[in-house]
Image 1 (cartoon, rainbow, N blue to C red):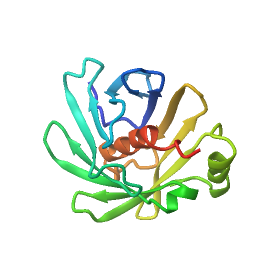
Image 2: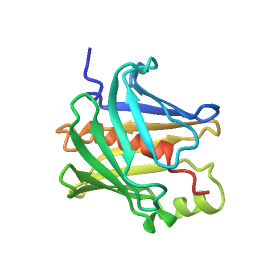
Image 3: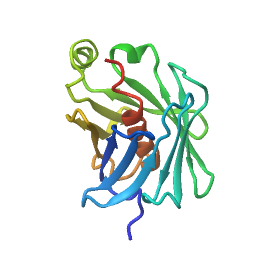
Length: 192
């Protein structure tokens, strides 16, 4: 069995219409479930746990906010199996009003990359006219695009296609990249 973080392409799917909280499924390109999360509803401080499957018996990755409801929140990403702090993701608060932007930080808190929404005009249209325009993000490490996150339009299910094929050398730790995509599904798209 291939390592859950060893795939080049993923689909992150968030089902919104759940009473107990959103369910996030992560599939590989063969449409096989590789990770699962059930987010608790009505939480003030984000604490997202990714599991190997829907039984939630094996925790793989944790994504936790450092503070309660912060516009420029920092989310720490840890490998649940080893306890290793992989890095952090920080939302660029004021910049994200018009166009979403996140900083990618390594385990030592140094900035190693950015996640940016694709187009300022489309971002403005999404916020002020219609949230029906799918989002796209470019993930850059040292100024080079290493991944893209592309949202599919669906009013009931958020789907984000992740493509790491531009990063064969894995300059971006896949665990950090997948955590970012889960955060984008869980947090972004609520600006409209």
